Image 1 (cartoon, rainbow, N blue to C red):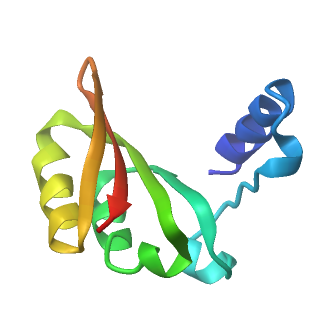
Image 2: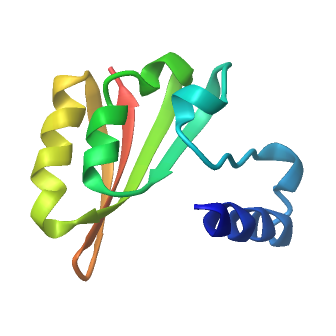
Length: 106
């Protein structure tokens, strides 16, 4: 979503992080290379589930994978995919019907 990238850039600038962040619109595996300290995905559960399979290829050792935008009805499906792909959940946030997970590859 191009609008989410625009807003993310604006928020990074407000918080003094513009030079330390990179926001990309599109499929992660098609748009970037390299390894990162933090990878965030704020999108529907099916995309996060699919991303769990190879997101570690873009993460530095001890990097965090933060996934959010997960509706309650799909939270367990995402957790299962994370565990099956070698991630541990180190923090959970639930607000109303939405879930977010901070994870690390084990």
